[in-house]
Length: 130
Image 1 (tube, rainbow, N blue to C red):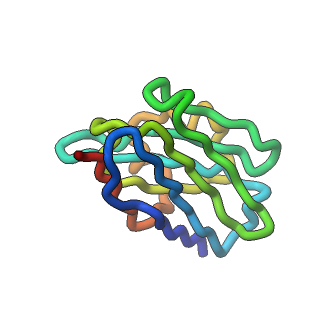
Image 2 (cartoon, rainbow, N blue to C red):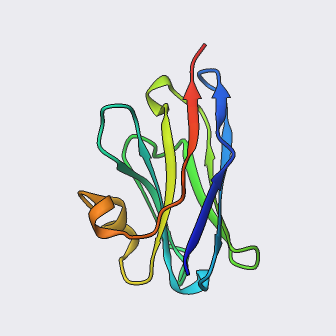
């Protein structure tokens, strides 16, 4: 059974940094694509960054390129999202999801991700405010 647990969120000032973790279990990370998504109040869930467990290829939303970095530790079954130069518009609940078929580009740009991906964590709140 695929299980995902996000952590690392919090309150940070604009320009600050956070590192989110997505601890996975119930599957082999090597064969899955993992994606970080976020959802702000009143908005749709959107793809932030995705990584392939097979070859490590990555994809980023334009709004976070150059500021966020996704990485994975297959031995620890964990995927990380390093977020630097945070902005108030990054405020959202951040979720991770896993899928064995979807490519990183397809996952991160998928409309209606809640329809397409079955497994989600409970999310971690990120608030960027002074």
